[in-house]
Length: 396
Ligand code: PLP
View: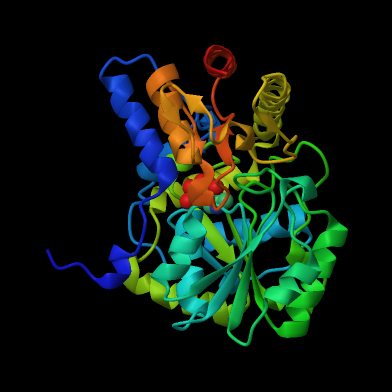
């Protein structure tokens, strides 16, 4: 079949691939435990579901404006003011089909062919592919585990060329869980303003911070705010992954471009999910606190256990719900009858021989690591770590 060169060049999501392999094995009755998905295991809180039911009963079942209902865009502006100290007007907000869609919209709106986007690694697997979709070119800044996986303003400035259009800033980060401090963000903002570079600030994990606090880079002054495109959504914070609601907040001209694009590509996001999102954003502090406390307990346990297992190690991630585990000591070793050269080899062997599904970080630009998600029950976490410990003890 004839397929475009552009789409042929796009790799499938490695996180979704491992998850589908895991689900298939499970369906076939194989005893496996999975840590692949970035999806809270909690149910969507009842007050949000209730708002959706009321929206259906009340006839909120028709097209909405392409950029989202005025009610939701106002609720998003209120949230940005209340939680982030930011002043936005509804014409700066575009509600999308998940934060993923907000990111694709953004890259499409700000990139011409060959424009460069700086992405620090380890990065969320979708960023480089999204840049490709928009005909851009990713420029990777490698960060090191010993630097807490953070890049400096100097490294950012050194990566800038005349073709640089944007920086992707994901704090807290998927997959590393690192969180930039206000001081670090201020120096990054200074470089962005000096060189007139957009900052695509993916803040989807802002509520899941266990040490430190979230600061939006857009909050420092108008110059950086004009260059920042905030990306956020309700999937992670409100356990609403299936509802598919995200949004961008940006300069009105960028927002208009995004909205025009979206009006032809998908029209508006689901009207019922939009109504539920109004309820989500206007309430739920207690639920968020409860889920966060549970995530923190799981993280603490996972980090301690990993660091007690010979052959692997990890840092303490300060946010999100992932742990990247260093497997560099295992490379070159024979495990489960196979020499481990890459994180994919390790993940394959673990899945086949120990019934443990972890995500290889090759797709995240960090092949010395595999990613655990602790958005799963404590029972699974204990079982998964037991399996890793037993497997490595037998093989090493
Ligand atoms: N950004 C990051 C860093 C993510 O990890 C994810 C989901 O895994 C998303 C954005 C997309 O979230 P959604 O499209 O569900 O809103």
